[in-house]
Length: 160
Image (tube, rainbow, N blue to C red; front, side):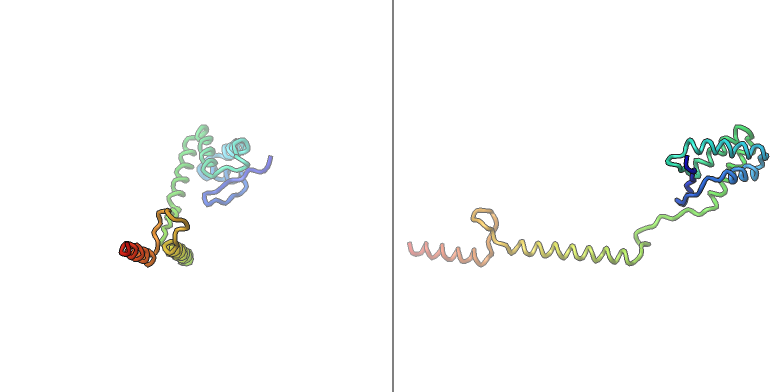
């Protein structure tokens, strides 16, 4: 099987390092034996669990703490507290609003919108100038032509 990778919160990936698991268990007050056993068990779990060879840091943290909790609840509690503190210490990425987008992007969007509006206006203007191609289509002729027709019909009525 290929090497298991850990997908970090920032999206980057790195190889699973069992030595990091051992170090975390020891820092939380676990014995060398508990650290080694945890790293071995979690390593086996990761190889079975990894989707396309990748697991997330959150999945890994949960598994480590879960395994340690079955052996030593105090060490597991210390690990959970460390994870909470680390999460609180890292500032969350603020949501980016449209006003914070680069000016170039907004400028390009505004220019594109202006071009589209201009093209639509040209189409509307051209459509208004067109005459119907066949009589009885329901479209109206230009005003000058309808006035001419009125004059012709009026003069014909006078002749009769």
